[in-house]
Length: 243
Image (cartoon, rainbow, N blue to C red; front, side, top):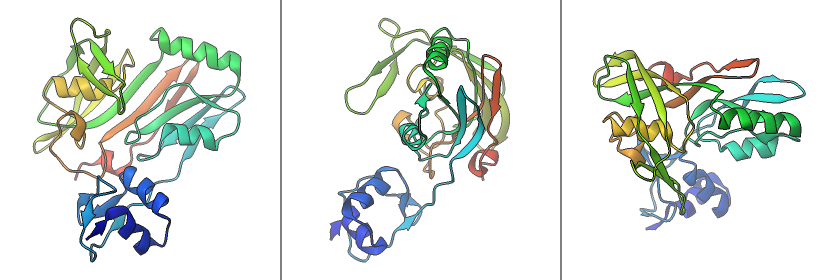
């Protein structure tokens, strides 16, 4: 028996540090099961499969803004660090793909962040969720976020902050539904918490109750509009069709 990251490092010819990083990013599988703990003890003959990450694509850029189609399993801050002279205007969870916006000059960045704070940014997502959704649903449930270690949010009627989510059904496959989701607020994990709250967690979101194992959480930032800008990121294969 040996720790997973050490076995992976030997098989891939990479450093132990790099092996831990790849496992933490959710890119390593044994068969169809994701390796979640880098220090987990596994048999010496364990064979790993490492998923490739799609390329980061620039949707649009000018002197004020850079719009990125972020692949899943890439950290928003890593994209910020890779592009000189930009700052994130918001962020997407590592597993979430789609439109990510960065600003290029201080005045624009400050104005854009103010737009987000004042709920004047249009944000539309597409997701696969557990269960069957036949009709439009509006969710207004206050969210409290606890940021000790890994961030976790929950519905809290007393301490929570206002949050609004609108869900529209797009497609049904078996006991899974594809939905369009519009959020007016931007609380931490808002979509994930609200969907779990109504009994339809995002597929693959084990933190908030999904029991379906997938390569990643099936949530995609499809469209975003701010000021006179409007951006759209095409759906990746795992969002376009569930199976």
